[in-house]
Image (cartoon, rainbow, N blue to C red; front, side):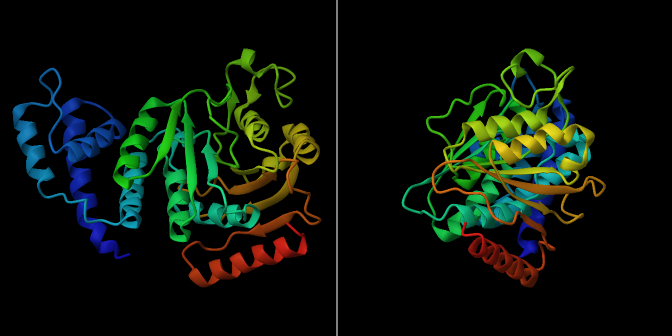
Length: 336
């Protein structure tokens, strides 16, 4: 992919978004979602006289210079990643709302292929904290290269993020079912997923009445949302289903983690914990890791040696190939 090919579209879409943001007195996220929708509809949406005719003319002049139809899916994903980074810089959303870096999709795809080798049926993948859909869409793109059939579901309780996810899915011609709900209530899925992927929000879950049936609820006070989401995901997965969770690297070092560690080593299989590079996320101080869990049942079994490794620089192709080889060797040694 030539980065120069997306530079001009990025600058023009960003400029149009800034103009609309100012005209509607809204945030960047909402303005971006409406800008992309306007570009698809080839007209500026006007409601209650806003934006003004002068602004509509200015936007139409910008829109005429933007051509996204000739961009490939890979280029569109790169463009959207730049726009999401811009959103994070302008709106400064809570860290739990920030988009997952696109490069994480490659690593999760490697792990999915490691555990889920049967290609006779579509692979059902669910993200219970889908947000803008960036993680799901990047995983889907990796599997598109392999021509592997997927069935994608995204859940989130933030309708603004889901609205943008729906627009991005249209641009990518990506078939995905998006559901607006609290992921700690029963998931409204037609079938149990084979894989759950989630960049988990870290913090307390405020609705104590909904945590009563969870093993990992706090003994007093609010419970950790990321603990509950791990439990909910694993209980919803199919037998032998795979859970891939982006978590704080020190997840099991915290004083409250005793119950969590006991749960993931007795109720499911703890298959791995992979440390991500420091520079993957915008907040370098927040070191992250990928927690790899697998449900009992099916052909699943506990690995003799839990996979512990450092994910290499995701921009270094040679190191990534070596890493993929290490994963394959681990799988063979542990008969996964």
